[in-house]
Image (cartoon, rainbow, N blue to C red; front, side, top):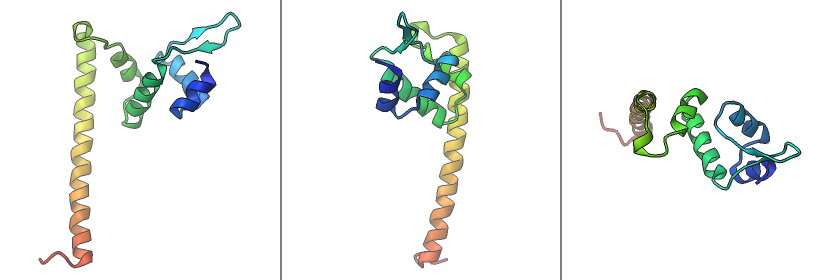
Length: 116
């Protein structure tokens, strides 16, 4: 699949796909004329990359985790990155949950359903 088709299928821009390639996140083949050709699994790769970026993972962490293809191949460095990023996402989740709970209290008060 060509870059335009991958962009359309995934919602990423062609510019973003070229950036992912520069960062080592995607590895397209090249035609004899130099055009990028992506394998069929590139759609899932791009969706995963976009999800990780949307959740605050830096591309340098994503590139390390991308190579995790089986449990037997996970390196100590990948385990470390995974644990660090898990802890960061968990802390953000807990902070968001606390904020949500506070908003619920405020809405209950505003709506008159709170009886304090």
